[in-house]
Amino acid sequence: MKKVRILIIGFGVIGSGVARAISEKREFISDKYGIDFEVVGIGERDGCIVCPEGIDAMEAYKLKQDGTLNKHPCWKDGVSSIDLIKGANADIVIEATPTNINSGEPGLSHMMAAFNTKKHVVTSNKGPLTIAFQKLKKTAEKNGVQFRFEAAVGGAMPVLNLVRETLQANEILSIEGILNGTCNYILTRMSTEGLPYEHVLSEAQELGIAEADPTYDVDGIDTACKLVILANAILGMNVSYKDADVTGITQISPGALKLASDDGYVIKLIGEIKDRNRPRVAPRLVPKDHPLAVGGTLNVISLRTDLAGEITVTGKGAGAIETSSSILSDLISIYKA
Image (cartoon, rainbow, N blue to C red; front, side):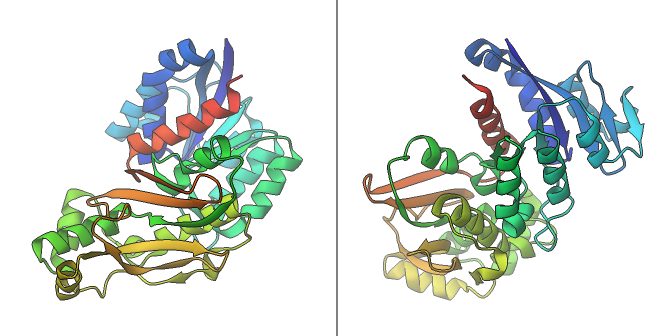
């Protein structure tokens, strides 16, 4: 049995969801792959849980839901996540702090500290990857550790692993898709119900599909970040968020959606990279019978390849459980024989 000691940095919706998934799937993964994942540290803004003999991941998850994580017997006030990463006897860091596309922090520093102490990194955090992808990649390679980030792109959709493990012989010629479930939900509801943008946005916020401040989603920023990561990781480009052309969905009217529908189209927020030109995010007409014409909160990515032709993957692009699926997949990929 291969024991893998894990640090989870950032214990919000994603980080705590991963802890729950590790607890629930620990026996399954152990039986199937011979890997025993054990959480030995959890880093939060105001302190850390440090427990070399192992943390009950489900207990930590429940304490977080109750708002009493700092009541854990191994809680230490004021210990920074950087100190935890540098000092803990661990094999891998799951970095799940919130995305910051301006500086990439604190995630960028967390990842660099992990690499420089010979720890693998699995992350859902888009910010550092949109700002310093090449720096992170080279630092990981220099230290002989792996850098995995499937969860940063499409929630549960296996896009990066699909390219890495199944399409190795293919050149990826172009990438396009719907990469934000909030926008897709809003446009779907506006189109099917003829409702105005403001009404559907309010509904999405009430349902928890949209944030209280939806700017990051509806202005196309989230889609652009994911597209930049795909450009760098799959196409070998060296671009950042500032290189993308970005238009969101706030100016789309029910009238425009109806006109499109009458002509056999839907309007979707599409991210695309063609011929290695700069990433582009904008509303676009999509035929109703096209693979990209998915509804609700679904995401979809289509890869055009030289040998396999068009490969399209559809799935849930957000959510704690769905994102945990990708994070656990990356963990297993690093350690399975």
